[in-house]
Image (cartoon, rainbow, N blue to C red):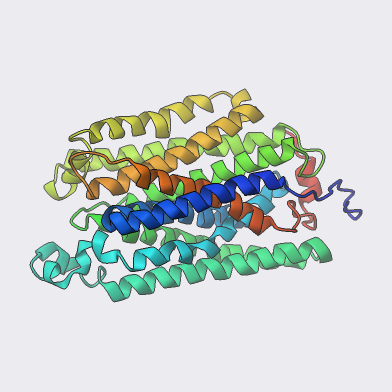
Amino acid sequence: MSSLYQIEYERKELPKKYFQIGLLFLCLGIIGIAAGYFFDSHRTAFNNIILLTFFISISVASLFLVAIEYVAGAVWSTPFRRISEFYSGFVLFLPVLLIPLLFNLGNVFHWMHPEVVEADKILKGKAPYLNVDFFMIRVSAFILLWFVFYFFIYKNSKKQDVTHDQYLTTKNIRLSAVFIPIFAITISFTSFDWLMSLEPHWFSTIFGVYYFSGSILAALAIVTFTAVWLNENGYLVNGLKKDHYYSLGALMFAFTNFWAYIAFSQFLLIWYANLPEETFWFLDRWEGNWIFITIGLMFIRFIIPYFGLLSQPSKMDPKRLKVISLWILIAHFYDLYWLAMPNLNKKEFLFSWIEISFILVTIGLLIVGFFKLSGKNNLVAIGDPKLKRGIDFRL
């Protein structure tokens, strides 16, 4: 219990059975991925890109949510901020997810082959940006930047649990103000590097915002699900009501609409201009049985979560929020599959034990990673001077 702010909080250990289940999923998935790289390294590498970009979304966008709270001085989110801090710690796992790809980059990026670039006018024009050395510099620099900001922001937040020093909040506000534009730049260029350059002949000026919106939505979803589950089971501070859930539900609803707006804008502008170097990308996803995945994306990514969160009561209903949050996470993974896999096979979508292995690793890593990152730390930022006001927040 924190006596300084009369906050009723007692840290309890998370159930180990969930960690064991997550570890089982993770081990089974790793075995499947290892087998996938042995039998079909080309296809497995494409799935690895989906896995990597999914966890970049979760980790870096969660750190963005932390930064936004600090800069905006938000109160309602303070009881949940430590959850975002834990998920931002997934930046620590990004190098591990990247390692298998380093040995298979040539399998997925044909612009990495000099003889191909030399014979292609468009690729030669993009060569100052799309080249192996600059690509590796960008990837390394982005991960390093994300880690540095995570390390210092989380270090200050955790230290404040003990010292209750309000100056640590000021330091994090300054760090967050610097991180926000860096986040906007790095998340956009990450989408160019890992997803858009899978088809380097394609042109789109809005793709970075598309990935940004999906990433924020995924981070909000995982934080919402975890916050509701932890609060229902008595792991957070006493005094949190359904009112505290409303802003989480409203933000998920807002970014669902924002993602749809950006997705439709990208499609409409490209289709209206009718330039072959742009329209072919959508045609590839409208041919063969990819048409079913494309139509499914409209319902899974937008229509279902839109109506699921449309009413005000739905934004405050714990059961509804947990279901929709998980749905949005699945939809984000589905979206990344739709973005990446047509570049592997334009005739039909592929789904077998290789894809299932990556799904198992995703589930397992989310569970195991949260357990490891939360460790013996407080699940609530009990030293934050805004916490009492956050607990007292009402609509």
